[in-house]
Length: 423
Image 1 (cartoon, rainbow, N blue to C red):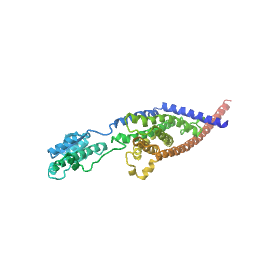
Image 2 (image 1 turned 120 degrees about the horizontal axis):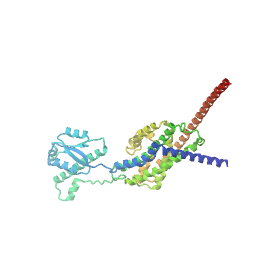
Image 3 (image 1 turned 120 degrees about the vertical axis):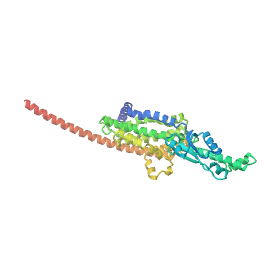
Image 4 (image 1 turned 180 degrees about the vertical axis):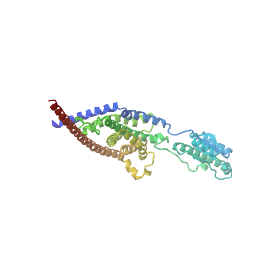
């Protein structure tokens, strides 16, 4: 009977802590923003901005020193393409660079004066391409358009010179080896289908850690807890505290996780080849690892402002360390080992492979197992940290009671002296 009574007390205390934590989440505007508003609105905004996948009609400046029929044909073909729009013709390269520096144009096509003479003289002609490399999407559009236009023009010039008898002979002379390009895993060839899936998983981790950190910081500021643990009978057990807080965070982010990984990709037609059963199995350890990781960070980082600065600062590096936007083989081993500390590293890799490549849970079992290892590891560290907080809290409470007792003793002595004087 004692065991059942003890278990009932633990469950009752955990439920009390869950209610208190849920109230604090609803009352604290900062925590509510990171727990609800940001996961709901930010993915929609980010996905809407990159919903076009690729850029079109990138403005370029043409410097045509040749001013021949062939140079004008090249300019017309570039302007007729879907990705590039000829903004204007500049008198010289300096004027074109001025337009690029003012961000009126993103690139320059320079056609030299000997362009047509080299072609007619059976020599190789050149087209110089100057690109603004600050944005890779515009660079790709400008450069790829230049390559396609020059290849098309070159094929036409070659056909005119060889004068084949049939159309098939013309095709073979221009393209002896046909290349069939079949894009896999990213059919649109865009930014959204390749990177935004990783961003959604990273948003889940960052908002969860930020919300937990803000909640803990607010509790310290209003003196509701001392070092996160209030002097209350409900908070005198490690598993009661962790269980109550965990239940609050898990209830919120179970919904947010389903929204980010299933609803948002559906709204914007991102690749979603994962089965919901496999996705559910993957998200369970990922959310658990993020919760315990956030609880540890909330204990280590004392002030709520520091949590925001820390997590915002590491957001971009964490995206690179996942190996999605930057090749994993090009990341130094030291930074790869650092990335293993964050749940987003394995969660992003597994989710992207499942959503865009059609991988099953068995195909990502390495990342899946590592997420469970992180969950157990961070749960153990969380228990150790909160045990340390409880010990400090009790010691601090005893010190406060000792100081209060001494003050009461001094007050009693003073009152006795006054009573004696009055007599």
